[in-house]
Structures are given as C-alpha cells and as structure tokens.
Image (cartoon, rainbow, N blue to C red; front, side, top):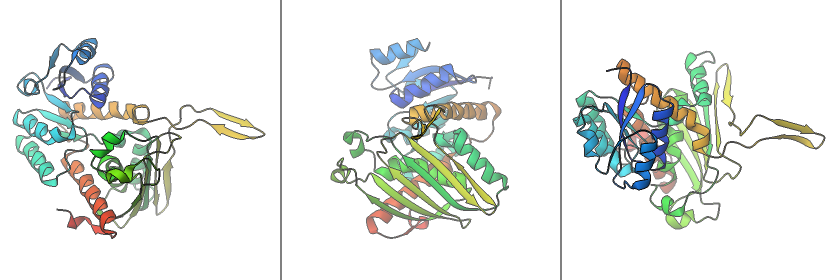
Amino acid sequence: MGKSVRIGLLGAGRIGKLHGENLVYAVPNATLAAVADPFLNDDTRAWAANLGVENCYDDPEKIFSDDSIDAVWICSSTSTHADFIKQAAKAGKHAFCEKPIDTDLAVIEEAIAAVEEAGVKLQVGFVRRFDHNHKKVRDTVASGKLGAPHIIKVTSRDPDHQPMEYIKVSGGIFLDMTIHDFDMARYLAGSEVTEVTAYGAALSGAGYDEVGDIDTAIVMLKFENGALGVIDNSRAAHYGYDQRTEVHCDKGCVQVANDLNDTSMISTAEGVEVSKPTWFFLERYNNAFIAEAVAFADAIIKDTPSLVGGKDGLAPVKIALAAAKSLKENRSVQISEIV
C-alpha cells in the first residue's frame, strides 16, 4: 500500500457528493479514482469531471472489478449497503459504509462475517465520533481523570422537518435519527447498553403520526458499567442543529455546547445576544466527515484497526430496535431480547 488509498465512490447523491468532494479536496492520503451510481446522468458526470475523476459508471461492478482500487466508499441507499460490503470483501477491497449497514441484524452479521473472512477493513460512518466537541468529551472520560461515568446525556434535535416522503421510508426515528445518538452514548460511556426505555410522541402537527412515526423522543439507557443515559430528540428545533453532550462522573462533569454560526456576543442594557447554532449536519459536521475519511485511509495505509468497525455498526441497530419495541409495548426492553 502506498501513501494514498485509491477509492471508488458508490452513490453520488447528497452524501456521496459530500464525501467525494472531501476526498478530493481535503483528504491528502486518498485519491478518488472512480464514481459509480445507477442513476448516473450528465450532471453527475460533470460533477465528477470537475473533481478530475474520469471514470464514471452506472454499474458498481466496474469498481469492484478494478484491481487498482483499494477501497470503496458506500454512500448509496441503505438497501444496497450490506451487499456492497460483501462484494467489496469478495474483491479484496476495504469498505467505508454510511450508516446503517442494514436494519436486519442477520444481514449486518453476514456483512461483518464477510469482511472478517476476507481480512479487509470496514469503517461505519458514525461521523459524530470524529467531531472536535464530542471527541473531547469521550477523551476526557476515557482518560479516567474524572473517575467512572455515572450519567450520559445526549441532546440531538434537527432544525426542521424532513420531507414526509422520506420519513415514510426512513425506518422510523430510532433507526434514522437516534441511531447516531445510540452510537454516541456507547462511545461516551465506554460501555455497552443493556436496557432501553423509550417514550415518544408526534407533537409538531406535521403529520408523523399519519405515517406511523414520531417527532419527539426521550430514550433512557442502562449500561454494563452501571452508568445511566438519557437521549432527547426532536425532528424540528427550528433554531438550528442542537447537538450537545455531557458525561457526569465520580469526580466531575464534562459537557459541550453547540457550535454557533459565529462567536460574537452583543451586550446591551436589554440583554446579551449570541448567534444561533449552525443549521444542519453539513455545516456542523463537515470537519468530522473529513477526519473520519483521513482516519480510515490512514488505517488502510498503516494496517491498523478501523476506529468504527463492524461491532459498532451492529450495536446501535440493536439499541434502535429495542427502543422501537419499548415504545410499541410501553415497557423497558433488554438488549438481550433483540436477536
């Protein structure tokens, strides 16, 4: 392996384009060698050409069969993720995969098994682990300087409603949105979740109840290490992307606030005014998207473990399924029930 990983991008929608541009402009240890999208059109070809990528296909197999490509970046629809991981493993290619790998546990386990058997690396796109704020919380807790964690708190509220056509096929709030927070809770606690209790409601009037979903949720967690956790979600905070975490420990507490549009503070006799949080994930987490790409390319080059592996792709899905079961059955659910 040289000092640059040659990458084939699978899927050139919104998130695929974000990753593609980052790989070209901001990830020095990677080279975007090809793009494949079954809906390839002239606009996508022009976008790729602007990045200096000449190899554009409507058939992903052309990337899997290209021996010059070291790794694939899977940014296609969720239904394709597990199959693309298995195809990558069969072709001896490493795989970065956007979350989730799948919503079926057996399918996820098959994909992980294929990766392990082939001896290739897998990184799952839980990008918030690479955020400067949340990583500081994790690193502080993991250092032991505050003692054992007692309470893990995650606030995650989207700024506005997603299109209802998307919500209908999203898998529900726990698999679509809170799944990031389930991963974050495990990451911050340094421990696995053992029990989940979920509460939820459709309070916004936007019609989530009409498609069998909710827009507001509280999820309480118990961890193997004895810590307790709470996650609060809203589909529409309106004031911006609310992303805060906190861990209270034996000897103290570490917490982080939102990234704001700017750091100005206007003070007058009427009060003190600061800017709103950044609007959504593209603004809030782009540096983290870059950091996760650099980290995976580095793991491939140096042959070190992926920082977010298959186990990390499986566990949040189990927690999400437990949360959905808890909400439906109005009771606490043990993770051991989810098989």
